[in-house]
Image (cartoon, rainbow, N blue to C red; front, side, top):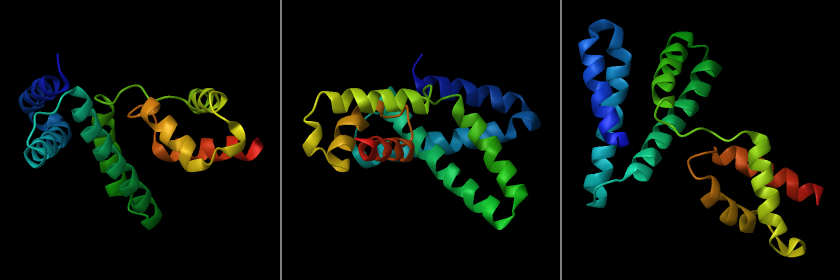
Length: 150
């Protein structure tokens, strides 16, 4: 079952759940609208990788919002955002741990001329390998740490 079909099935389930599925329903509708807008703007049908990228973008927006809400002391909005993130996590691919990201970075650097590598060069090589499976910020910090230790 594709991600789009899974979203549609879960939306129907959330509708039937009435009050209990309210948060899930609103999040799924928001994601489906984002997917639809992306398809309209790109004039193409998104595959599972494209849908996963849209979901990752939605998750990133919520993480940024959560940080702002917590900084401002808005626990009500922070709790709501956490609930939305819990719904989105179901559709995200399994995230890599920091150790797994570090190993991918080390393997990538090992295949290159280590003396001339810069941060941007390593990021260009690593990001396609971890796309959707790791946050760019974590990858960036890991690359920076490993390059400083070389």
